Amino acid sequence: MIESWAAVPPAGLLPRRIIVDDLTGPEVAAFLREHIDEMRAVTPPHSKHALDLPGLRVPEVTFWTMLEGDTIVATGALKALDAEHAEVKSMRTHPARKRQGIATLMLEHLLAEARRMGFRRLSLETGSFAFFAPARALYARHGFEARGPFGDYQEDPNSVYLTRTI
Image: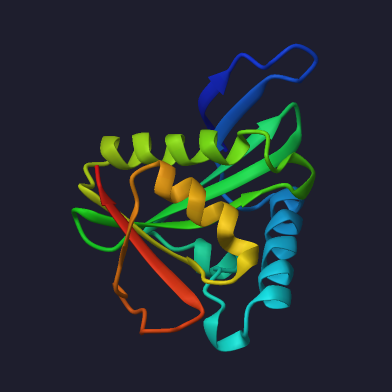
């Protein structure tokens, strides 16, 4: 793991940092397993696009973990689609930490890293169900707009496709 960012926490919270994660630790494996299980519970199988560990352990994906002390509170990844276009993948906030600004911090980190890596466009797929409304609102606040499918995605009423230039 390579440390890539740190923040001064609010009073009473542990220091927060975002690291590039090599996806070998049991904690991140468990966190991602919970993510996949949650997506399977709320999304029809043909519409679940969350990547499992093998899907994230490919050269075109960079994965970050946000920690408070030693506790994982969020994850996020970028998948290079081509030299100028990347996809936001595996955005997840620990259920106990939702609505506390953690997802905003992770998304801002991903935007900054995408710029640093030379990407000019970021796209993502998220669900169309009410469960995903907070995620869609987060992405809209950060300038993502609706578009059609991209990359290998196909039109799907259970999916919402968003993009923005950076």
